[in-house]
Image (cartoon, rainbow, N blue to C red; front, side):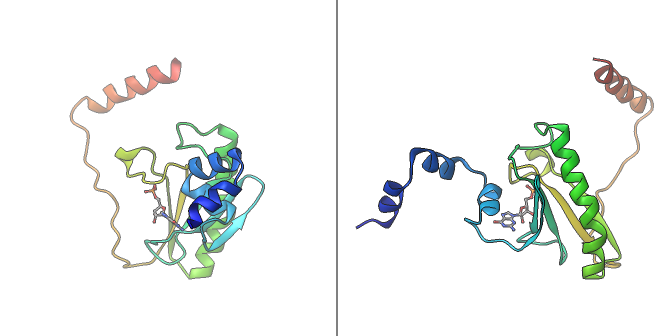
Length: 156
Ligand code: 5GP
């Protein structure tokens, strides 16, 4: 007797495909994977990160899955930002944070691990030891060259 086989047999093809192709975060929204839910509205869902940088570290995701910011429709991104704007001061007060970082990793090169677009809300505390990424100045003429490339894409 195989429990998994029995379960699969009771699912419709649609349910089976959905179960197999859903992102981790869609499974969390559906309640198939447990989470500590912080907030929900029509378009977004927010829950505590399972490995917080600091207590209160929250992920804000769109209910419709897009892999990253490059794929997100503007309206969906704005809905995420509205939820972030609502949550940031409330999470800050709740955990007594001194500051908040918000961040979004897009692409493996940027450290993204879960390919369902999400914004991190990260409470920060004086002396918590987390460092910003190190910056380094442009070489002579480099900023102008980069700016020219960006302006070119803006005109396209
Ligand atoms: P990324 O590097 O893709 O921007 O971050 C993904 C985040 O999702 C990580 O901070 C990680 O701790 C969090 N995460 C991964 N799996 C789970 C999970 O099953 N539950 C929760 N609550 N967070 C998760």
